[in-house]
Length: 196
Image (tube, rainbow, N blue to C red; front, side):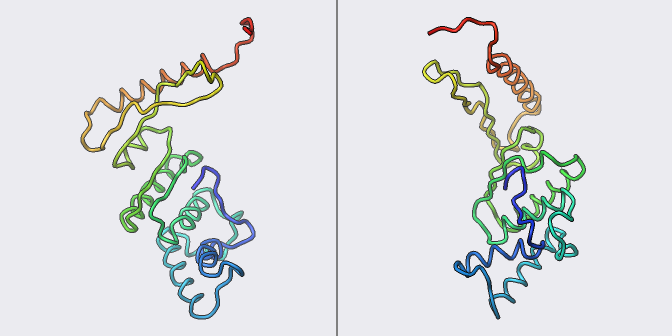
């Protein structure tokens, strides 16, 4: 699931979630019929109840708020019970109250569906709140052989629940230093001579 929600604007909430079943079970027509459709509709309705969108099942994505679109995207992502869910800054565009609601939803779905969730976030506190293991990437790689290549190394690998209390402050300070370093060295130099 990406920062920008990948929902189909011409389909209703129900049809967006149902599409997961249709793509898998009917690869040529992408349509289900009869008993298969009834079973898929029952599972889709249950998923919409679990993410709080059942009442909006007949609405189109453009009629939904940002949080509702986020929940729709989550429902689409997990309707087929994947083993792994990848989240790329899924809550970055949401206000704090809505983000807290989404955190609760993700934790509830994680417990219910036993998913492995990999989430990319720039919010360290969010990582501590939602994660069971936290990998912190830092220390910008500067390679003289590839000066335009960017990258980082893992500076912390933390199984959560085992860390010291001051670790969050240390991680925040380290991240701030790294951001300043990147701003200083990654910005194009305007008055420096060009070396050939």
